[in-house]
Length: 421
Image (tube, rainbow, N blue to C red; front, side, top):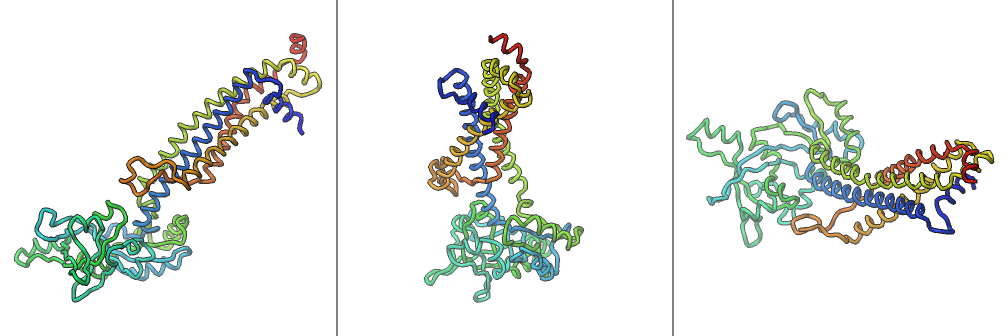
């Protein structure tokens, strides 16, 4: 074993007696361990919330979306989808028409509501969105039956308006949609009647309450007629084999498409403000919790400085035996590294243990969990975060040992031996 490591370990752990210096050193290790454990647990919980929100939003939003710049819709969606499908990692592409409309049902106080209407092709939507899979009441049927097109609503909206799909014993509820182009037509032709498009409720989906309250789905052709976009679509949405390839696919699309005509946005771009806030919260919490390790580092400075003072004679003898000041510095830097290794190691085991227990057994429930989609704090352990926490903690411990190491190396051996003698 290297003599510098042997001496550093001997100064750090004394098998003969417990001194005030060893107690302070132990407190420093405990501080490092506590800081590392707290950082791992908090970062894992932050990652858990981030992944949960991302997965929820990606079930509503596509991985990549292509839209026309500055104009309402564009033609030639089939050729654009063919270009998109030729790009690696793109599994599915679907065109859509989207706009706001007035949903009218009955004559009561809640007889009309403004909703976001999405016209889609059910054959291609399945691979891009989870809406069809989450239609649990009725079916995702947008086709025509007896001359009446189908519409699929959110569960919350359906319950609020008492709208239900049909059964063998009960006819389906019917609603009407009035779009902005329809209102313009009505105002320009005041005696031409109200141009309402009537639909039959075929199913109710359940994704997220706010989304369920505001979105309805009809067929692509019916949406084009409703918004007077014959032959045009609002955009094209893509689903990839891996969410992580969204940035690369966006870059390739931007190379192949005219940037003055088309804009390409990834799932992150669609909700960027929300994701940025969550990332800011994560690193803000990390910066606060790292102060625990910083305080422990100040304790390391104090404990190592006291060791230098106590071992002044030993350091003088080592230098008289031929140990260079550089190697004396390395002894105390190694001691700081050992404190960091032990403290970070204990914190790593403790933090990962708590995170894994919460991940598998949900020990800590969310307060008011009945209002959320999850019952307990979510946990997602990212290896990069764990490695960064351990490395930063050990680096702080080594930096804390620099002052005591420099002070030990500056001791004059002759004076140290004479004084102590």
